[in-house]
Image 1 (tube, rainbow, N blue to C red):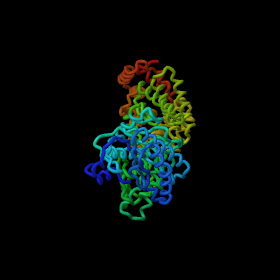
Image 2: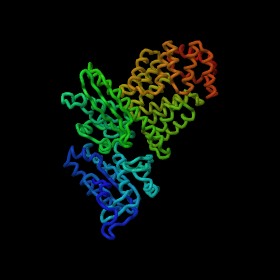
Image 3: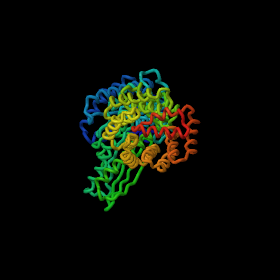
Image 4: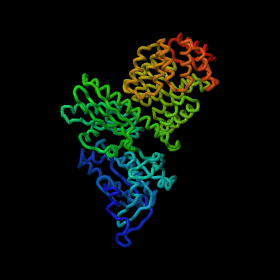
Length: 601
């Protein structure tokens, strides 16, 4: 479709025929087909027939019915003007709702999705054409909409708020292409059923979009040097990375058959992201130079045009396929971590009242690691709100399970056993809602550990790792459980594996290292590990105090306990008795250490 900039360049804004140019306020609708080039490459005849039906039976009559006029149309999109913002949004909702209904009856390969952008602003009317910055902004808003979604400017939102039965989601400030200033963007949250919104299972290796979370595409890795005999290796890395990233259910990962249409082509990441309907793109290259292989990988936020992470690997080719597996697992873990961090940061930039269920969940997750009573209560509030918005959102239940157990371990509740039981019940609920969510099983392991159901605990962690062996966090959590149940050697192996998978790991991994060393009676090693953690919670400080006691440094141990009581005067040995040591003698010895350090019931 000709871009609004192209139209502006080829049509003068003034100086044409006398009386032919006028300015007016108009609501502009810009619609574009997602992945049009890909659909045409796969099935040109079928795509054109489907698109023709959409235009003739849905879009043109809908625009006319709502008092609009199409002023620019091409193979993959259109521009239309409306005199009323309400009419423009009503038309957009009708188009997306009906498109979703039509797509439901089609196989995935035949589904056509639109992105729609809406803007209200002054435009220039020249003959039958509509020009100006108001049109360009509508096009830019279209480019950031999700497949099946609608993005609109704040001007449109203010005009229609309360006048049409939809809700709006504040998507934050965006720096749009060729726009000098950031633009506040809103999305239509309901009633449109966006692509993938009904799914409750994690995305398999052929997924086309996420259920709630971020979407990602792995472009075929370049085979540097072009030796066709080596193409299998670069293709294998790409396919395996797609498969391993698909184990993270919060990521919607585009299927390999879709991304391989770009193989061997010079591509623009922003264009690819728009075609495939994703926010994040992974690209890389592979070069074999005996006896080494060099692999470059980078993760890009295509919407913000920002590199989030990159890495170079140079490895010996002695064991090619073991090397491939090692690199793929490590890259998958790091990418998932980087995307999660970026999504958390993005969620925190949004005003709370505008958040949908997934974003409320992210907001709760972003603060629960503060390990304070206030943060815990706020996290509970966010996660209960997420459940209220989406009662079948398994991840919200597992998150609430965590913070309820955290509230008991922090000494922030009057009845810690009731909080632990609620956490256990919530974890069971999460698993029941989504038995393929590895994090739900991991949380059941965590809840079972503190409810002293040790057999179920280890079994739940094993199931979580079966579903996603690339989760460094689950490996670290399972290491903690193994150590507390007396299987210290296995725990040490698991935490080492977790740190290899995620070299960007949070410092609580070192807390697990310290716990393992403590159980092995390697107190100096435990002290080094604990002192390297900047957790700030009394649950960590008590471990540090116990280590000082074992090392005979009673003054240091008492100093730590004094800090604990200064931060939380009501903290007592009652909370420490919740420690999930399987061996009662180990728990008694630990409590005795803390008593010697000055902590009382």
